[in-house]
Length: 269
Image (cartoon, rainbow, N blue to C red):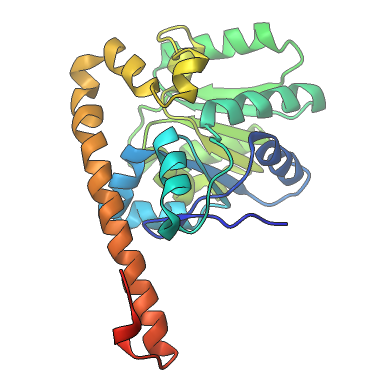
């Protein structure tokens, strides 16, 4: 039976396990259409709330999963969001699972994003880890918007099946929404800063910190100047976001009652 999916700022978040998500990605790779998967965390949802274009890009993605434990916990604790998420499904785990599948089935991948040095290092390390993985090509993410169509055409010329984009949010999601279909790939995923981790430039938090929702602490210690505002202020801002989501949910219930002809006095918060 399909599990109900919570909705954050108008964006439905798929209520799937990692294995179910990877099975869906594998099924898409058997089909010719372009599909894209996106992930959300607290910082992304704050941006989604104030950025209509970003919100539309996520709302029209083929699948959106919860990358942050704060999103998972909010869905489990707050019934008005509409569904209790069974698991966190983060971009790095999805990328790793798809990489393994592509290495086994001979599907071609393309890497787009980060610096030239980083993306080259990622190619080398992936080739060592997955000797049978076909890497169709790679390019850094430092190109102007005006060059996007040419970049998409270059990717199409490689006949890649899978595209991983590491340009940070919201740029990577907006780019995939606009230009992804032009690339000719069957599956695309934005992975944020994961190329830096794969290249050995940064470390990822231990598993126990990830499961306890403390990955942000680990990242903050590594990059305090760049991330202090995002995490220390952003975490408090997310609580405000959830309060606003509760009001929006109440407004939707009221609108539904009114449309059904029920008196507004029956609505409770």
